[in-house]
Length: 175
Image (cartoon, rainbow, N blue to C red; front, side, top):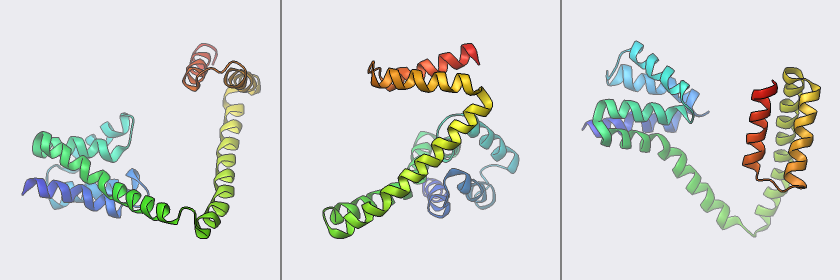
């Protein structure tokens, strides 16, 4: 019965938590602290702080930790599975719909409308990134990094991971 409760404690927030991990945290707290009483608010806050300190999606880290505390290794596996299952099922469903629509007029129309939106979103992100870089790092460093990255990627065909490493080293040494 405990494994079913672990599953529900993370599956329900996964369905209802529209907006990702931060939107799901209060729902997980409701399940873990209020409904099942596996920990008190202070312990939950400590798990949340630990989850925020580590890289990756917060809900899966919290699910793994809480699931392990309550049900051992099987509990951790069940909790993480329950946390990602709603998104996984939705992605599989949408991929199936898109696969069926592929090659149809509706799909071409959808693609026609989605491409400019994606381009605008990427443009806004790039603008925000570069304007922040100019303010925080200065124009000279930003321009040097842009030109060096462009040349490394296009002229010298350096792997993008190495370009990122170069940027990190440059920032660590000069910024």
